[in-house]
Image 1 (cartoon, helix red, strand yellow):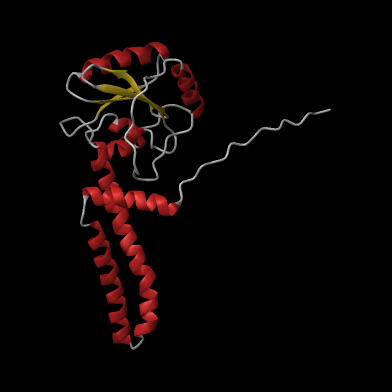
Image 2 (spheres, rainbow, N blue to C red):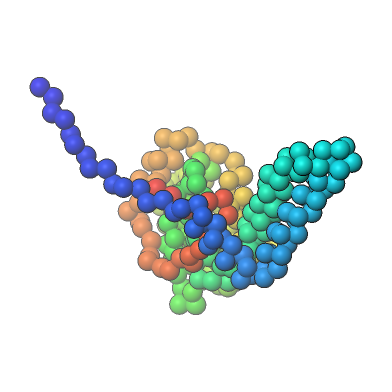
Length: 227
């Protein structure tokens, strides 16, 4: 006879949409105080255009109703674009900002933050995906030394696996924080799904250090990946 295994399901805690919107708005307003007036102006402008067309064609009420959801969509689209850039600005320069962005990538990547940290708070984060192992450094120019050490460690634990180095910043050869997610997701895939899982298993024992991660709403529904 077969025995049934009763596994207790852990309740999933979901953030209400209104609360997520409110948090995103608060973050955006702290960076761009004019956001409320801009949203209202775009909504009223689009709605006014719809009503104006209704007057021209003799159906102001009908086209006014049709223009209402269009105006809402236009205002929300504008807000999401501004909120996206404001989210990056709000954490830029904070300790662990790069890790916060990396851990928010939804699919295909697992990030271990702060696998190396110097006394000057330079740090390296390790991500594993189909592109291989990506070492992301943030801090001063001295962070190159940490990158070299972590590259040697990655090559020792996962020989033959491609290792990509990324330095967060606005200088030559560096990747701006706001473009970090896009940079990783566009890297060429060099590992199969099975190879990627094997690499993750090998590096799991290496671990990382505990560190504070900047909190707050991030673009594209940012959340930490499942381990």
